Each structure stands twice: as C-alpha cells, then as structure tokens.
Length: 309
Image 1 (tube, one colour):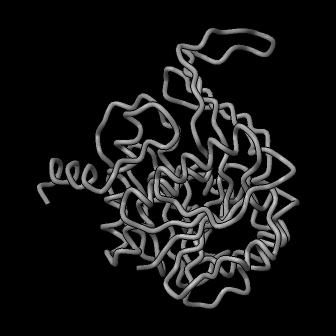
Image 2: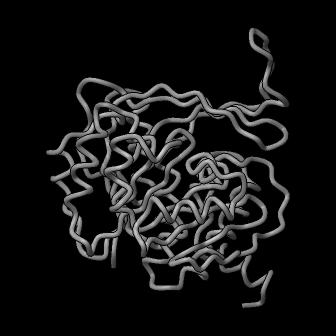
C-alpha cells in the first residue's frame, strides 16, 4: 500500500467562534474557544481516516504545543517521522470562525518552520508514495530550499502533490519555478488558483495552470458548495458537490485534499476520488473545528444517500 509523506506544518489552532470579526482596535466576545491540532494535521487525518498510511515528515517542538501535536497525530495513527526540536515549541494559529462560516487565521511559526536535508533523507520515499508539499513551506527560510532540493531529487515513481494555500500566489518566485515542473497533482480552491494564475474565473485558471505545470499533471480545483473541477491533458470535468448546511468551513479544503489522495492511492479514478472528496468536504463543514474530515464509512453513506451508488 502506498503512503503519504506530508512535508508541511502541523500547528496548534486556537479555534474561536464569533458572530463577526471586530473592527481594528475593537473587541468581541467569542461563543467558544478550544485548542486543536491543525495545519498539515488536517490533511493527514483525512487521509488516514480514509485508509491511507501517513508519515509526518515535518518539525514538531518541545513544550505544551508540541506535546499536543504529537498526541493528536498518535491518536490518528499518523507516524511521526522526525524527532522533536530541542530549541522551539510547535507554533500557534488563532482561527476565528464567523457566523457566516467564514474563517480568518493569524499564525506564529514554531519548530514546524524548520527542516534540513538530513531530516528529509531520514525517511525514505518509495515507488507509488505521495509526497505532499504545502505552499506555506516555501515561505519558511528554515526549510524551503532543502525541501525543494529533496523533491527535485525524488524518483519519477513518487507522486508529488502540491497545495499552494493562500500565500503562494505567484508562479514566478524562484523556488516555485523550480518546483512546478515536478508536480504530479495540483490541489487548491478556486480563489487560490485564480490568484496564482491571474485569471478571473475557474475555467481560465485551469487553462492557465497548464502553462506552468507538466503535461500529465492532474489538477483539482475546489469550488465550495459547487464541488470541484478536475483537469488532465486539457479535459476539464466538473464534479458536483453535496447540499449541506455549513457551520464552519475551517478544514474543509484539507479534508477534500486528504480524501482525494487516499482515493487515488486505493486505485480509484480521479472522478470517483473527487466525488468522495466532495462528500468529505461537505460533511466537514457541518462540524466545528479544523480536523473534521469523516472516515470512509461516512463518505460512503453520504454518496449512497445522494446517488444510490
């Protein structure tokens, strides 16, 4: 069975629910607040709950937040590939969710922002594995160059998954230009794809991404409640979403990405993997918190309820 090697950042989220964000200098009361493992943990948990072995190939720190991150990963059956940092704790992200289900993040990076060539070489990637790369990683000077160098040296039989996130917004940055030709699977939401390409709609973004990515790349672009688009070799297909009542969009994209990769690893088609990922994201937004991806049985149940197959 293939595995996922996740090279991103596991952080601790301080999740707070508010009616509406305050104006600058203002103050509001939150309806709830709690600590949760987040960041790259969300994708890994989604993949693991859907039957894909996962290794966290990233940093984690000493201290309260590092302990929380390791406890959460262990509980999900995620293998922790590296030893803990002796210098810094794991970072913190304040995640604010409004009544509209929109979320806002403020992050402070910790030990997860550092990764060396020796760290990366310590966990071997094997043929058929999926190496998951986050755009956030390209912003961290303590890991970006080593990570890109390692990815570029991976054998062709290892599939590189790239999630640009909201901050990797240009194909022209030197590290991005180096990485793009090695990507096998692009996964993002509509806004990220449009910002990255300068397109004004999702169709144009899919066409422009082709100019930056390898010929055989598989692209998945999420479109919220509408589902997602998948594209390969110029063939664009829309895969419809599922109708639900959303309460919190935090982690929905991560659920989609993790379940999609798990589907491919199990040998199903990209269309079927996208349908399963849409179902997982739909269920995730009906729950509060960052790592709310359902397991395979819940995904199956929603698909059966909706399509009867």
